[in-house]
Image (cartoon, rainbow over all chains, first blue to last red):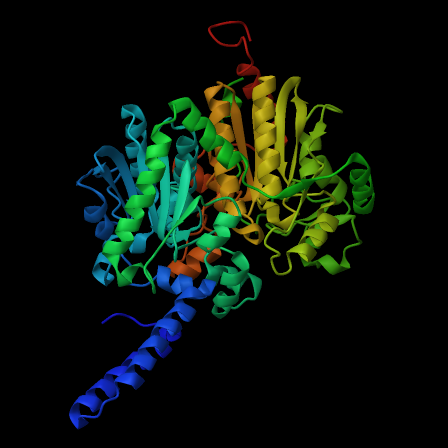
Length: 331
Length: 305
């Protein structure tokens, strides 16, 4: 049973009405084909209206949909081969971060992905997609390996955030993320980061330092979870919907703000409606960027990535005179 | 000389009921504990939030705002810290002409910025520039905790990045003193990517074989711990400073996990192998001075320091 959202109910109700009419028309042998055709047209329009104008909070719901495809759903559709490599060589194998060597359209690539579970049992194993430091250490180990062997890196981001428990603190969660950021910014190989579901704060960013950053149409990527933002701003986590709008974290927002390079199209209603189609779109867009990046020299790749990071941020520089006035006001 | 570095810290726990406390001479030992903050003449006396000792403000100032009774480190502003650390008149401020915009038109951000500027007296959450510490030239960045909890938005990220870039040009070491709640929510994804931007700049600094000392002070959390604050060649914390990724309140709320006493303190972090040194504020200048001297160019391969 596919979970339905409130905003999808009018569509479902209309579809039910059509099937009732069809049943009625068949039973009573009355020709209702015109009425049915009208309603079917209405369904198409309603779908366009609803799915075409999703609010940020509705996108959050789609991005967190329990049946939203995860990395393991896409992997066999994206890669001809995938050899999973486990462990951080230090402490443990974190199951919320999956990585290895894959064959992508004939090119050997290193893949690192965050993975949420599909059910409670799997979610416990994967800590709901929230990596501990050992997950980031594993990611770093595999990415360093890619740099060593000159393999392009593809990362897939899907996490509510980094693990936020005592164990994570004891093993240096902050340092583990920071090391990933620094290392990724220095690599000489192409790095493509794709947000496929939730992009939760620093825990997501740790895999997000790409030459190219892509986002699936209904994913989101935020400095803070909307619930937490609402509880800080309005002392009420129920106002997450308002916070979602204020944070401007949809793919479209991030493209406007210069963080995201391209948005990958999802089928109407979200990736879970058609995983094959979504994977096809992902493959096309990633392949296009990978081909383009692979034509650059290693030094240029690194420099361009650095320049991209360097340019993110919005501020103003003022004249000496306005500065003097400003400082007078502060005194 | 080295014994000071490896000296066991004496800042751990002093029971708040201790009778051994130093007390200002004109107050009898028992009285001060009963005096509430309200009854104290403004500005003359301060009550230590940790041990309750009432301290003569002038004594506190002279002791780098460290409680003379229990060594509790009071939070201090970036400017106060600057004065404690650098050689007189050696500081040259950089990039104070970069000001914050409100790119997301985030609810209430404009007002919060004005409030923070009034409260802190500086334009943004970090002070950057060039200075000398015990004669050693250094590029310095100090977070201002009074400015929206030292949080990092576009301006903090940009100023820190520029400071690191200039250190590479000038071939100077970098010291960043962190006090921060993390990435600034009000600038959304732009704040998040300042973590990557500052880390990238530090990556280049490292490739240039230039020293970076990160000093962590109370409190350092979130996106700042997960970026520049953790990337030092040497990580130094002030005694008892709270340092972590997730704040204790959030851990308690989301994980329903009660943190043990002393979790996320500097001492906890050191015990778990996450920081090199715990240095009291009154010793900080001398330790930084020595570390800078040992890393001066020409100090390698046995050249005399």
